[in-house]
Length: 289
Image (cartoon, one colour):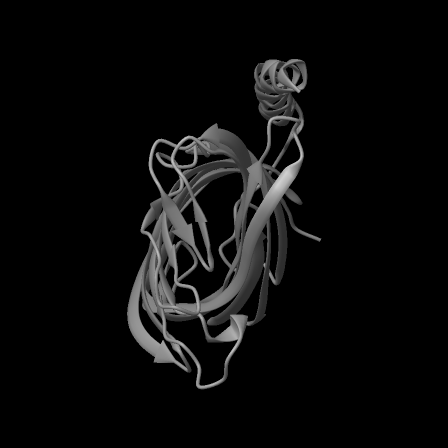
């Protein structure tokens, strides 16, 4: 298992170097071959794929049927990575000049194994200090945005942005015995709705460059979820060919979700709290069909 971990870690620099070489080659080829290419803020359809460095900070509390639970710092208490490489996909569709819809998905999957230095209560299980615990923690985001441009000039676009989506949380803790076998485990899946509202802007710069920025916030209660969400980010784009754009960007989502118990019994009645932030530094390609 240790050799496997080392093998995985040694692969990361190779991936980074390969991606960097591909992007550099794309930019060089574009500068040598593209003629008359102009960026455009009003494409009808855009399909983007990026490799992102996600930077994560998570605090989670899942109470059991007795109402007990521990505030768990996923990185400090469980040894989960605070950053890793993950894919991100997004599609933008503009049916009219002033209106746009975007859907996408950001992957964020982590696992670790660590000897606990304090007692942790997660759901109906308590993991004692000194226990060898294996952790799986997926916290992926599906996102949606609607944008309406108040200003829709050829080189400037400014307007309203309404975001929505869901945080897909899948956490599992396994107590591992001396022989490597799982002695007991506890898992919890939560899908929390998220949403925010704010402003965005996009601007052309020169013959091939464009940049964009966005900031949104909301505090809302839906069913047994009470969420506070702050989102924002920006991107710089280089139009390599008429149908290919290279994008470098940054985004952040800061989410606090309180989960109230339901009236019914069982695992579905558990309450808890999630404090979660995800930053992404991405490099990718946008295709314009």
